[in-house]
Image 1 (cartoon, rainbow, N blue to C red):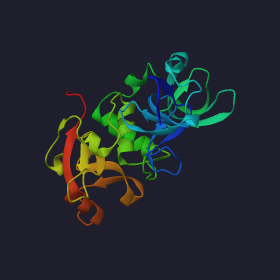
Image 2 (cartoon, rainbow, N blue to C red):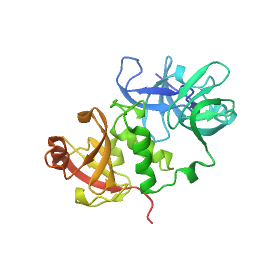
Image 3 (tube, rainbow, N blue to C red):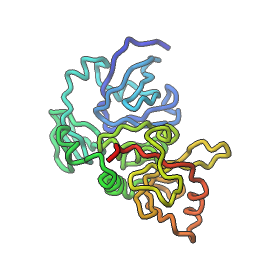
Image 4 (cartoon, one colour):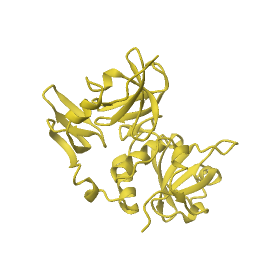
Amino acid sequence: MTTVDPGCAIVHAPVAPVFAEPRVASPQISQLVAGRCVELLEQRDDWYRIRGPDEYEGWLHRGYLSASPDERARQSTRLDRVSLGCITTNGTGRRAMPLGSLLAAEESVKSGDVVSVDEQATRFPAEAEAITRSARLYFEGTSYLWGGVTPWGADCSGLVQTSFWLHGIQLRRDAWQQSEQGEPGEADLLAARTGDLLFFSDRIDGHITHVAIALGMQRLVHLALGRGGYAVERLTDERDPYVAKLRERFVKARRVLPAD
């Protein structure tokens, strides 16, 4: 293992899997989408241990990174648009670009939707109703995928992180990390405010294992293995055994949105 000089690299693949170990057979623990800048921490053959914008660390193969993994790569790449799910061409072929990926200036959008970086905050304000609307619009129908962060497949904290990032709020990667951000929410699950993060545990020690977003009116949206993916739950549905388990496993709520 070699410690590399401080620097960064740009993810150029539409989706780059982040692994627990420097080998492709290792479990995927997260993903990074195109345009993300990562810190290079260590190198082992063609693998880098990286730290992403959310401070999450893992191993990424150099094949997913820009050809010159250093500060010059970031300075020479102008990323001016955010994909909301689109198809582009860049002179070498067509690319499907997931929600949240950043498009280089030379990429031409053939179909789908994008928003300029300058207009992102206006179109996607850091407001509870707007964030929950995005989570439902973009992730409806998404299958559960451990380590995933896009509508092509995501886990519970991936849905939360991407939805909030779209609205200008950078959250940590895992549910237990997100549970340490923001301020305390309501102690009663049924009283949660729209946009609050709701945390659950299925472990004896209470370690956080799941996160959802409160929709208000005693509902939540999440990506759950027990549902196979995207679901909106009505927490007052006592006839649903899955909802009953959720209520039993509720630990706490956190409020990460700016105060009104």
